[in-house]
Image 1 (tube, helix red, strand yellow):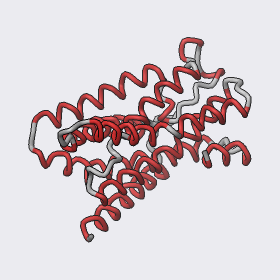
Image 2: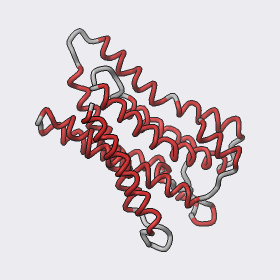
Image 3: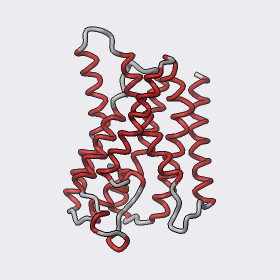
Length: 234
């Protein structure tokens, strides 16, 4: 909500700044995925964990049919795309809400506290550019500011709602289901890997991977590595 408000009040329309912010979040996500999340979920040493990672990867691929890559910062300007390339704001809202709801499901006490904090930080960093892109697209497609912020507020509730749903499911079952959360985490890691690699492997309009983006990616990975070191230190 704060990200969206800043965009609206300051009229931030710098596409390059959004791209760099997306690159940082993607590098940070892929960093915590490889340094923290994957080692944690693979402690069970089961082939099914890998299957659920792939499931998350494919699920995100399907969701992008609805969102048309809005989580990558694609804006679908009228001048640069035909009618078939336009994404419905409602499909955009549904696709990104499913995406962020699933990301909230692993945020429960069943996970290691340090890992949970790192995971939440990763989601927050990732959601800043998504919120900017989402509000920009809502306004671009002619929504009033009131309606756009209402939808952004609903979107902001999806991750907490995912966490609450997991807590309710955990309380509803007599047996301990905490080990199933590793599979949920695996799905989310698959989503993270798809989103982050899609952003990192995209080129700009001139098909160059410029030095600013490269340095931003290095910074994102360095921050993720620093957080991982702090986690192991505790």
